[in-house]
Image 1 (tube, rainbow, N blue to C red):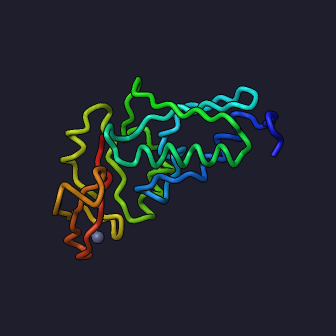
Image 2 (cartoon, rainbow, N blue to C red):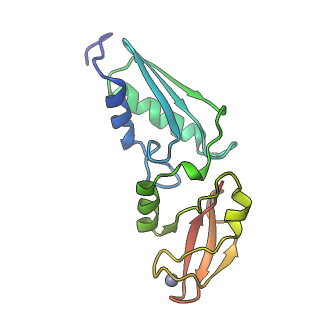
Amino acid sequence: MNKGKVNISNAEVLEALKDVTDPEIPVLSLVDMKIIRDVKVDKDEVYVTMTPTFAGCPAIYQMKSDIEEKLRELGFEKVHVDLSFKEPWTTDMLDDEARSKLETFGITPPTKHEGDPTSAMHATAICPHCKSEDTTMENPFGPTLCRMIYYCNACNQPFERFKAL
Ligand SMILES: [Zn+2]
């Protein structure tokens, strides 16, 4: 490691952070999730701004320490990870690539809601296995805060849906 001299661009830091996955959704990185909002390298220091998906999300500290660990691996001596709540995170920020990764993982992506997540919660959930719309909500509380459990009446399999926020 070159002490005090890290020659890495903002874009390279962002690229490296694609290795840091969401503890609750291992198929998506914190970059895919749009949890990482900003990266700024200043000589041997790096500043990262993150916005957690759910305020009070128990995974915040896990994510923060995973980010810090990754940045130290890159050679930064001073690592700053700041939380920002200025522009709240919403599931509408997930792009098509992130949505299709979720679906492949077996989780129905959150419905786009354009600012009205309540309407999205009541929208039909499409089964990620067989694409049927004949589904029933079994339990609004899945294994984590951000998931709901559904049952597909067409292929008789339970599945999870990412809660719209
Ligand atoms: Zn199905």
